Length: 259
Figure 1 (cartoon, rainbow, N blue to C red):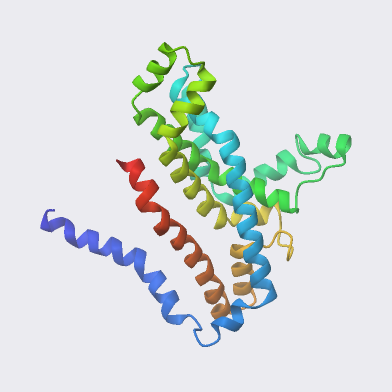
Figure 2 (cartoon, one colour; figure 1 turned 30 degrees about the horizontal axis):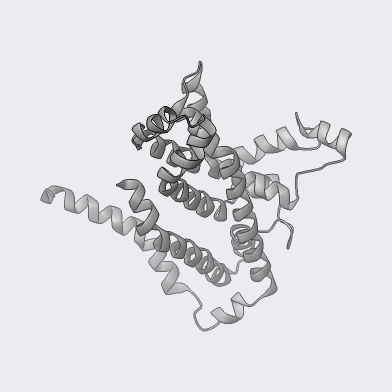
C-alpha cells in the first residue's frame, strides 16, 4: 500500500472508532447491571429482537424471489425496478416512515380499505414496527442474494435442466444450496439493519412502551430526558448484539460470499 494512503486511511479509521471509544469510556460501568435490568430495557430489547427477526423472515419470503427475478429474468423496466429497490438505502428513514403512513395509515392509499373492509389498523402497532424495519432492511438482502446469484456458476443449473429437473426443483435443490452463503449473509445484514432502525419506526409505529418502543427508540427517549449516561448503557446493548452477530457469522458466511 502506498505510504501516501496511510494517513487518510488512519484518519478514516479514527473517525469511525473514536465515537465508539468515547461511548465505552463514558459508559456508567458501575451502574450498568442495574441499568440493563430495568423493565424498560428488557422490554425494548425483547421487542427489538422479535421484530427484527420477523422483519428478516418477511424479507426472506419476498426478497429471495425478487433477487432471483433480477438476476435471472429479463423484463421491461428491470433497471427501474432495481433502482426502486435500492431507494430505501438512500432515502432518509423518516421519509420512509411518512411514506408507509400515507400508504398504510387509516386514511392511506391502502390502509383506508384495510380499515373499512377488515377493521385492520396497522400504524402504531407491533406490526407497524415489523413493516418499517422490513422496508429499510430488505435492499440489503436483495442486493446480497442477487450478487450471489450472478456470481454462481450457471452450468449447474443447466446440467439440472438437461437431466429433466423442473425450474422449481432446480431452484430448490441446486440454486438455493449454491447461494446459501449469500442468502445468510444478506439475512444477517438485514437483521442487524432492522435491529438498529429508528426513523421509519418512530414515524410509522410511534413509541409505545412494550408495544412499539424498540432499543433505538428507548435510547432516543432516554437522551430526550437528559440522561445521557443511561442512553450510553442502553446503546452498549445494541452495539454488543450487533457485533456479536456480525463477528460470529462473518468468517463463515460473509467470507464465503466474498470468495
